Length: 306
Image 1 (tube, rainbow, N blue to C red):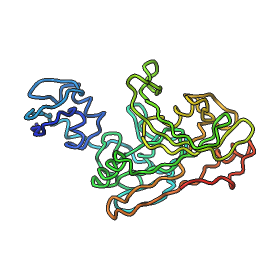
Image 2: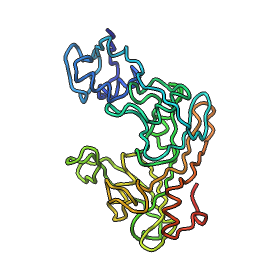
Image 3: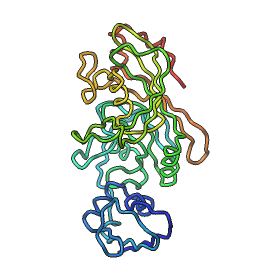
């Protein structure tokens, strides 16, 4: 059994506090709190309870004995960069970033663990995961191989130092000027796997959208999200009336592509050790290129930033 005394004066949620104390994922910690394996002053509480100064957190031994049970799987990863601290992957579409309680194999994490080690922070299902891409979104994504790199990258995301650029094909003729879109996003009350615009209690999001090309009834959009809300780009474009091609969750199926036409083509951040500002480019995948060709867009004429 482990005991931690909360010494700060500012109240903080117990699940959020413990993420940095015992190096496990927040989702796992929530389940352990709900099951009574983590308590405050001997009392079973909810994960949302805020700690007060001198509260005693009691953690049963079973919580800290967790080990990785993720099956390493051989796969030909498209590695954009790798050193002792991080690994940057060009994620293929139709692939989960990490395992879930229902899907334990065939994810990027399974493939990376066959190739190399990752930080244990985020176990049992998300070791080394500092951000994610949706299953059907392709492109550049970074993972932490050490604990130090994990916390450094997490802080960079929180402080909005990480720069991400996406390319998307959308239905409709998008306005020519760059748009700064600020909308409050939240989980959908009707469908838990979806997000919705909620002006009463949604979390703020900020996205810069720029049209790169227009053809017939379609537009090629460059999206630069400042915040990193779940489904942010997909939901914002759909709300504006320009759903991403093939996005069944926020739009509809398309005969031009069998997944959402969204690709993270550029990812920039400061190296956790050298502090060098790095930029990695993930080539536009063949299915998006083919879709552009079908709507008479010449990919060579697109001016992508940065």
